Length: 233
Ligand SMILES: C[S@@+](CC[C@H](N)C(=O)[O-])C[C@H]1O[C@@H](n2cnc3c(N)ncnc32)[C@H](O)[C@@H]1O
Image 1 (tube, protein in one colour):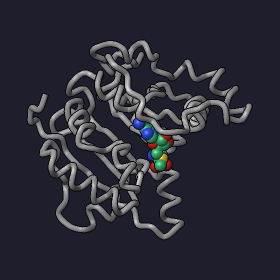
Image 2 (cartoon, rainbow, N blue to C red; image 1 turned 90 degrees about the horizontal axis):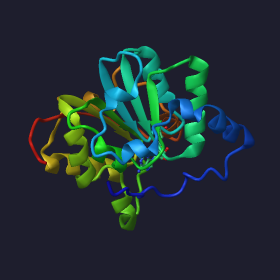
Image 3 (cartoon, protein in one colour; image 1 turned 45 degrees about the vertical axis):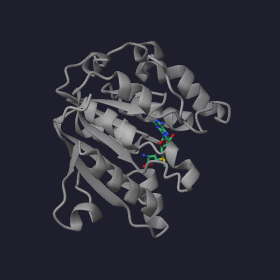
């Protein structure tokens, strides 16, 4: 498979503190998904976990890992894949997983698009993208992780009726997401009143960027979509 790198900045290990580098050297291999697996044509995600799991959930852009850790603690019978190339955050997540003794989380440190392309179709029950980088300048819109191409890749791997949760606090990106999702016709937006996007359910643990948005006076929006079974590939 042709691997893509449309990740901008951040993934470098060079700027890491000695402590973070030591964490990565000591324990990252316990959690990381080997890059060679991503070269395979088809990745069966349940095969990444030693213990019995009933479903696999994926988080793209987990940042420092608050959300994925909270979900993994609450749902020990779910296998989690976290994908983020930001090595500072990867080190934070590894440390949290180690401290909590969690063995139901695996980490891919490459571009989300690579793993979206190789996961077995309809193998993911829930996908989270929380406060993705907004890239507000028009010339940078092509860098947005939610775009017409990745929406189709996401629907390909989510079971019909499976959930895609998105949160953002950036108005122009929210409008872009709503438009791209509607035009894709492969997800249904679950919404009946304003409350559905202004308030999140109790099982949406807070993230660092959510706290930052609220403290700076921005109102996050929480979107829940369900994958259709429409065949597009
Ligand atoms: C604004 S931060 C939000 C982090 C976290 N979800 C939160 O809410 O605190 C966006 C994250 O997406 C990650 N990211 C950016 N491009 C990515 C890509 N192509 N694949 C996976 N993760 C990506 C960044 O490294 C960063 O950690």
